[in-house]
Length: 335
Image (cartoon, rainbow, N blue to C red; front, side):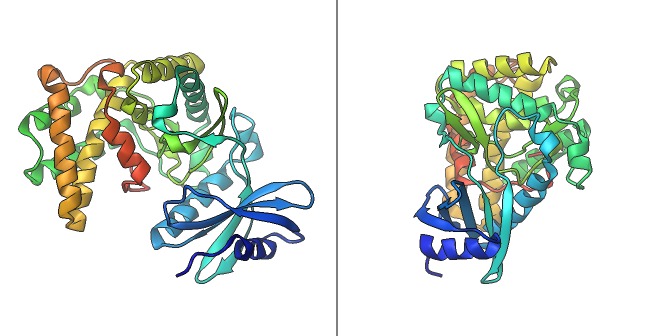
């Protein structure tokens, strides 16, 4: 299907929002080819965004995101130190739907562009999400995972990856040691976004101004929203973010750093499983290469069940790369 032009999208927006008077429309990027989108200016001075999915996967993501965003009431949003796009209207188009939402100001991030100052703001932003009442998720029927559910999902992923015969034995032993460490799984589940990466955040200066992508909102492991920062090549970034997170929450989860490392490493196993499911030699070879690179990095620590601090895992740039690619994760799972 040919891409929809900004003018076509502007016309759809007027169908989606009654009385909308669009004065200017411009294309916006960052959609990975799966979404047609445009930035709209209106006669009453507002700036809006319209998005139309181009694939079934993008449509599914959009639907899940809408459910989550609707759960963020005005009272919930008042607790967050950043903006969340508010949906203003929708219109059917070619078997899917166009969604018009508010524009949230800010520049999108890339992991390499995160400074310690921005990392501190990210830590506080994530802490604010985790401090939300769990009823935000429960009231709309989104997943609520216990610590044991998170552990079991990790073990299932580990077992499935082991069954491929492609994961180095030393890594499997490392992961099995983490899965069997009962102290690792003693945490209180919290409201989590569930799919954060650098590109989720909008910033102005050193401050997070907005957060995009809420399709995997759930109650789960707080480490899920933190592990992606371990991919930074600057060890001060995850360290600063974790410190700011703990200070803002006032709750010190002693094992969150270890679970974040474990989650980051298992992301490579999930990429391997994705490749085997798709029967893609290219993805499988890519994943195997990443797993062996990981083994080289942690080879001096294989006698331990994982580092107790987040910083030593820095350099897992493959993980952030996978997240930016949109590597698939089950919407109903902790990971």
